[in-house]
Length: 133
Image (cartoon, rainbow, N blue to C red):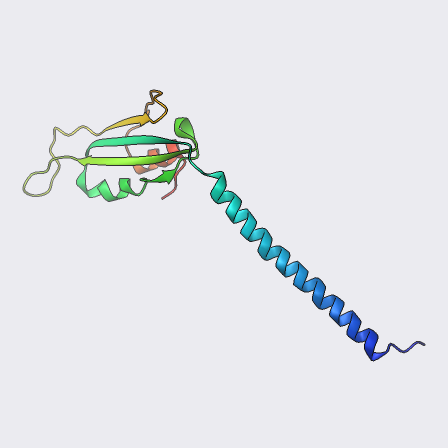
């Protein structure tokens, strides 16, 4: 039976430590590179402008969460979404006027006509633009 010298044990330990360090560096490097790639992948190359009119004032902040987000689906795919909201007039009690009709106007910096085909709601905006807020 051969005896393993202390030097050989030390060499094996060094090799194992070096392999572990390489694996850890690879995992960290891989994560950083993938994160950087995802940031660069979504460089928006045009803008979509969504104007919401006669929106219930209680929901203005909810709709503004979509502002300046990357669009991943629909006619505005790979665009940066810009949202403006014009709230509906309210009475002295804060109740929206009955004459308010929620509308959405969608346009693109490319100049092509776009249509928002749904009733205005956060769920429909998520569905149409692929943005989760």
